[in-house]
Length: 210
Length: 210
DNA sequence: CTACGATTCAATCGTTTGATGGATAAATAA
DNA sequence: TTATTTATCCATCAAACGATTGAATCGTAG
Image (cartoon, rainbow over all chains, first blue to last red; front, side, top):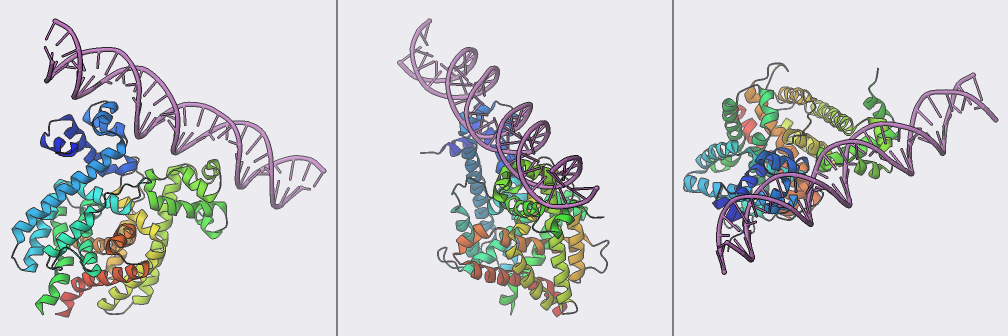
């Protein structure tokens, strides 16, 4: 058994996959309401009806996009977990920040779409939001803040959310922040990592240092 | 000399002011594209053409809203500055977080609209974005990270942005995060303050403590 | 009371948007 | 070959949207 989304991802040349890729980018850039199906179709170079043929309505496509980016992000977190496993907390944070920042810089639509879901209202909500709490619990465990994935304390959830958000913010807000600090992309990326480490590492390592 | 916006704010009962208030809320909730002029007009209880009569087009109204909330926020920062002036950095942060969080909790549309400007694209951009860099410099000075408002270092700008964003995130994302941690509004507010202090205070006080 | 500017609304216009039906061609099966 | 399924585009629709026009209403100064 395989969902249409999985089928599309297996063959990146397929029309379904091409549409999904463009939809990720455009939805990520302009949000749900700011995007029109015509924008996506034009970017792919196809007719609107072809888009409808493959993905149904606009909302269906959007939900597929959200599921898709969450799947990608989850996979990335597993990769990170593999690398940092067993290291002391300070190093785990250091490496996590580097890897995650690098990844998101190459796929800013991931951060964009996640933040859109947090802060925007879609006027006709779907409910595929059971994924994020899963994430949060995973990261909490990975950071050594929780032992089991179930029953993570609210205080811990909040800390993890603060960490995730602070990363997404800098990625997603690049177009706004980078002109402010007047640096090029490469330097901005370095600044993001530096700033995140400055903010996050002391908070999580101070207690165990004592 | 007084702008239309200033005039509207002087008489809160005026139609101009009533429209602006509702527009703040609706734009803050659904973003620019997610909001229709009809939604605003209906909420105020007037005809669309009345809205156009007072504020011109949708975009004009939106820009007035953004200017308005930035003015409010700036005033609030001045209030905070008055209170914390002269105190040691740790306390300054502590009090700033409390005051700012309380304020934004009562005016979540402020955080919403600011984040919308960071992360969203409006498809037809305006350019009233010279205000935020001003803010950032102000806060940098207030936190003792910069001496003069001009020529703030990029590293400093980034730190201030991280602080501002982490607050806005929790306010703006309440509808998403609060169900996750399963607490009521009051408890959530306390959790936000606690988490922000946990993350931010060690970072900025560690160096001077040594 | 009248005249006039300011304000509000009902009606409507032109465009955009999401979506669909039908024609057409290419690929696949029988 | 023929029949059938798959994939694509063209033309078009109904609803929603931003915006405008012209008439009605209100307060006020002369």
